[in-house]
Amino acid sequence: MSRVFVGGNLWYDKMERGESSMAQQTLPHDHRQAMEQQSSRVPSVENFQTVAEVFKQLGDGSRIRIFWLLCHCEECVTNLSAMIQMSSPAVSHHLRQLRSAGLIVNRREGKEVYYTAAPTEQAMLLHRMIEDIMEITCPAEEESVPASDREQP
Image 1 (cartoon, helix red, strand yellow):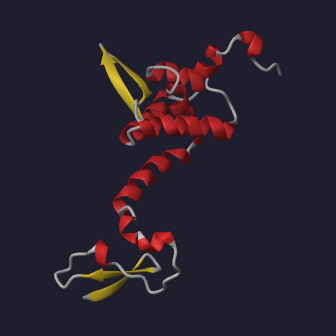
Image 2 (cartoon, rainbow, N blue to C red; image 1 turned 90 degrees about the horizontal axis):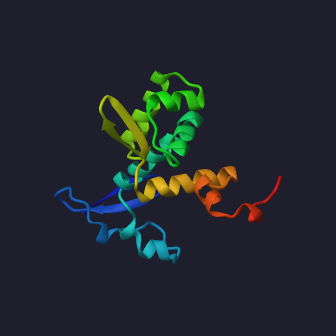
């Protein structure tokens, strides 16, 4: 068996055939932390890459804004363009990015294509995170609160 230095601080035992065996993983220092004992449960790089792809969508304010709107409605490119005062080609570019990340879905009705947030846990979590960070209430939640119970500015 040979040792390989990976990720700046982990040593992995490799089988002679080149196959990695996470169960035989040893670390150079034993700090008696629970994670050291469970290091075979560390998700693969591919799992983290999936998360990174979703988080890439957060790198553009316009894209986040489009995504947030689509969490609350189903719209076509033309209406989205008018709502956020951006050109249709620019909106289409952002929609392609969001769709490839699995955050939105679309449906065709004749010549028109309508977009909305994907019905996935990732999309719902991102929606909630945006609203929590911006400290705003989801319009759907606002509608369910009686007007007399709403805070007045």
